Image 1 (cartoon, rainbow, N blue to C red):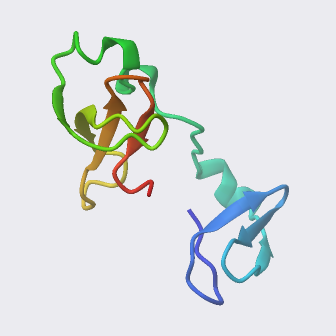
Image 2 (image 1 turned 60 degrees about the horizontal axis):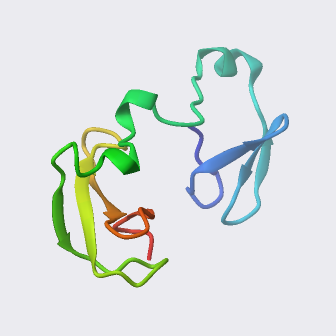
Length: 106
């Protein structure tokens, strides 16, 4: 993970450069440091709850507005997706259309 020298925001990789999404600052990626870095595109398959299995897994239901179909009930679960010192993220799965969203997606 790399942070911007100008504004402190997290930078993203773009070809052979680091690019800040906030201020646009760019810097070259160091090949030696890159060898030690691990980049993941998605979570492990075993960590992702299959939407159609939500009821079978015994997930709790709650009142939650689905942004896709306007249904007012959803299954929910919490999962640690950031570092251990950050709070868990709450995920919702619509009981009607099975749309999946997380609490901070508004």
